[in-house]
Length: 116
Length: 114
Image (cartoon, rainbow over all chains, first blue to last red; front, side):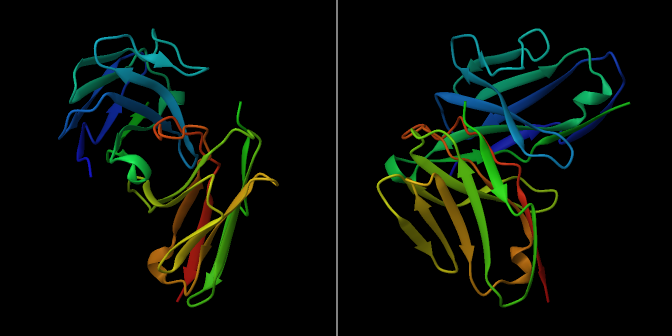
């Protein structure tokens, strides 16, 4: 199974600042997925990041707020821009691994952001 | 888009009892039905999944049953143990071979009392 490392694991941020979350995978993957989990809530897909092309954003999420980079097949970053307290969440990087019916989605440990 | 609902939102059982969580969905084209477990402070992890051409799948104490006609699938945990205490999420999708873009239910908090 894929091993996914995220940095930072947690941070406390000031309103109006931006923070970049890094995601490193131990194998080459075509797509990487960024999810958000607000406190006590479910997971919501923010965007899909393909290497060499712009990320595809889900409804309600825009590139200006959540710019994503995907410079190679093992790495991606998500920036949370101009943060407000409503951005306090866990941000999770994820990738698919496996073949056929054994294919599944694996998550990183998440980056817990608190915005004051 | 897909509308996903889980019931119940919380469930408390005695150790050794069974637990059942139901997930209903709206997209009749959904063909991949996973269940994720998220322990407190940890990442979500896939515990079992089923694809649309199968009605039931078992893995030791956990099982998933699918009713495509009624558009619901259920997670069954038998002989519950305290370590089963967690939040469980369903995430039905039409992904087929693509399991990455998931729409998660709101979650069910399971508490197993020793």
